[in-house]
Structures are given as C-alpha cells and as structure tokens.
Length: 229
Ligand SMILES: O=C(CO)[C@@H](O)[C@@H](O)COP(=O)(O)O
Image 1 (tube, rainbow, N blue to C red):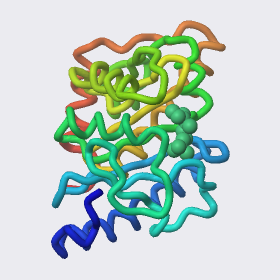
Image 2: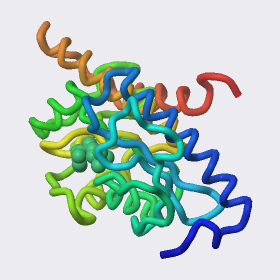
Image 3: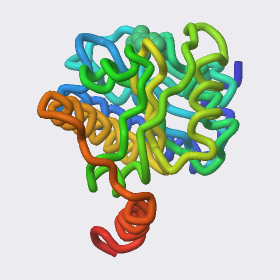
C-alpha cells in the first residue's frame, strides 16, 4: 500500500483541503433530507494526484469529521484512513477513471428520485428547471449489484453521452456527477426536487413536455449565463 508520506507536500495539502470539503458536503446531504441514517456518500477527486477522498462506510453523518474521510487511489485501493472506505468506492473510482472531466460523485437514496428509480422510469423534462440543470430528462441506468464495477459502468454508460449530471440507477437510487463534489451535491438536491415536483404534477394530470429547442436554449443559458461570472 502506498503511504500518504510518499506523496509530495502539495498533494498532502490538497488531501487535507479535500477532506474538509468532502466532510462539509456530507452535511449538505442531511441538510436537504437526501439521505437516511448512513445511506449515501460523497467523493472528490484530486487534481494533483490520481487519488480520491470519500466517506467512510457506515459512519453516522453526525459523527463524520474531516479526519474520518478516506483517501483511495482511482482503483479504489485504500491509501490513507482509519476506516474502511464507502461500499460505493468502486463505483466512484470507475467514474473517475472513465470520465476524466469529472471530479465529484454523489450517491443518495432520496425518496422521490429513488421512487422513480424503483419504477425504472426516467423523469421527463417538463420543468424549465430540468432544462436548466439536466438539459433534458433524468435518465435511468441499469440494475446493478454492488460489489464490483457494475454500478460504475452503468453510471458511465448512461451519462457519457448525456447532458444530465444525474442518473437513476434502477431499483437503487440516484448517482450524480460534477466538475466538483459541490456541483454533484447540487445535482443530487436538484434531482430530488424535480422528482418530487413531477410526481406532484402527475397527481394533477399529464405534465406538458417542453420542446427540444426550448430545452436546448434553457440549458445553454443556464450553463453559460446564469449566476456570477
Ligand atoms: O446504496 C448503498 C450501496 O450502494 C448504501 O450502502 C450506501 O448508500 C451507503 O454505503 P456507505 O456507508 O457509503 O458504505
């Protein structure tokens, strides 16, 4: 096993910062009611080395500290940490190996998004917020059993050619990706929000689809103009 001390100071510094960031972002999962008990996990990939920082498996959110965050290589092998890494580490690592532009991965079991995953049905793009954040429907990924690269492969195969940062893994729940872990956490909050809203809309009747050219315009504005630059 490679030891943390084998890495240069700038890598060790980024690891310390990333442990702080990833720990703080786990608090956002409970803040937005996206997880129950110890379900869910957040990771961030480093820029200075082929390493990732991820949640320790099965540790209660209210007990997580930056030092509890686990450092793994991009094959999911433990590099530094006193705890076993998340049971989803292989999935996160697979995404990082196959989507080099991605530096954050989040998994939750948020209620409404997971309900759509249980049905294996994509969330149709019937809200301008969905055009903004997802650039279309939120797709469904294949059923995959935890324990090998199956989940990670399903995430990549579904999202590689999609504008969506979220995928509903069938019978399991949402996984989200981003250029940072914070962006992936935002996508996790937004997919739960739209899953809930579209569910409510369906209780009222048939939601109206948005034309593709308008979805494209919404997504282009949101990804190039919206917010502070
Ligand atoms: O959904 C799964 C595994 O895919 C849960 O066990 C997961 O949310 C939480 O596992 P960890 O505590 O991160 O090991």
